Length: 177
Image (cartoon, rainbow, N blue to C red):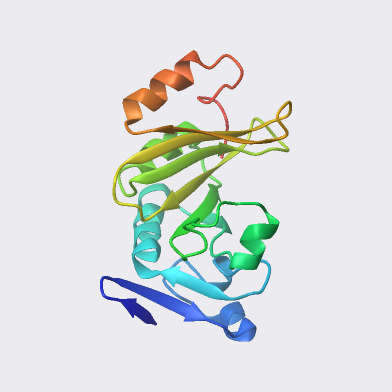
């Protein structure tokens, strides 16, 4: 574990260890390791909040956790992404909740939450969470005309919901997670 005065991290460089080590009641190290190099860097507060989320909504499946800087460049994400710091995770669920209901339950535990449509299936989505302190919410989708992912940021949930209601291109309230 690594400490930076206020934050504790789990760091695993060994691929075999990251493949088998249990981190918490509901998560294994392999759930969060980099898909490129297999290394794991994980903020313990993120892990604890995700455990709390599981107790509120049921099992979640991490689709992306830590990203090494090289992998982050390959997928053209921004350099200072919380994924590169081990402070973010993207997840899906298998439950009766739709994407928006999941988002609402997630906001009780996290301040930084992204509601993201998949590029390949616009009726399906995933949630991004990270350990940022100030409230920040966003909607994200892939724009075929611009040929890139678009992010729309909001400081309040009310502003985000108002934008979702006005959006005629995306049915944010019925996408599944």
